[in-house]
Image 1 (cartoon, rainbow, N blue to C red):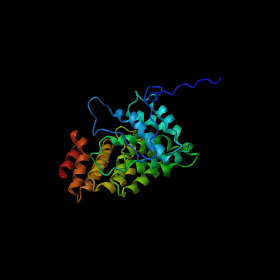
Image 2 (cartoon, rainbow, N blue to C red; image 1 turned 180 degrees about the horizontal axis):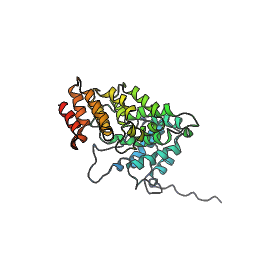
Image 3 (cartoon, rainbow, N blue to C red; image 1 turned 90 degrees about the vertical axis):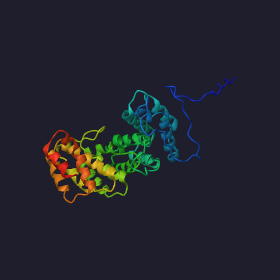
Image 4 (tube, rainbow, N blue to C red; image 1 turned 30 degrees about the vertical axis):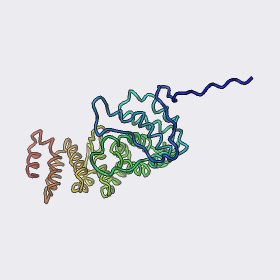
Length: 308
């Protein structure tokens, strides 16, 4: 006697945590998606809410549309498991691990899928809101799996990882993932950043300065550049007169980091930059020296006065 089949469940599918799971979008809906996000943090919400169930759904959709073999349901289940208590940075790492489990085993193949899944680049340098945080898992993926050749079948992952960061920083910022490369391959990475100072995209040019800041907030410090910041100075020289205020502000903040450990070096650099300085460069110098000036350092106060 045949056993009676169990009736199909009438309600939506749920994960072990109770989260509703949705099937992949139909093929006709072929465009990449980003989750809705506010322009700034709203009362009663936190940054971690930017990487929630909706973000997971968008991530699954975007990957599946360019890589049909992607097991979207299995990814969703792993992604939601244990997500709730995690902060924004840990959620980025958690979702990167889930991607790692369900993308091709070889890093270069996996990251090419992620690159193909990206939405359009940002078309402005301000007022982008918080939506770009959707790409934090992508950045975490590159940082966690794009440095060690062991994740890439023993092959050097540097070039494909730099290509990925170039693409990602045009949509979010690769300043966090870049730290791992500056620690593993400082000369190669700084040389590439110097090349990118001539890139047409201001987001890429900003990355060259911001990503190499010795004491970048939210990110791992760079002990080698804290001890000796001079290897990164050619990048700042190349960007000090950049047409975008967004880029020049990063140069000023980079110099501010350096001044915390090597104030004399920064004073000498700013003295040289004052010669034939434009109003924009003078602003950069004042901004770079604001912290030592607040502490009453005479050299900083003098240079800021000269930069008026």
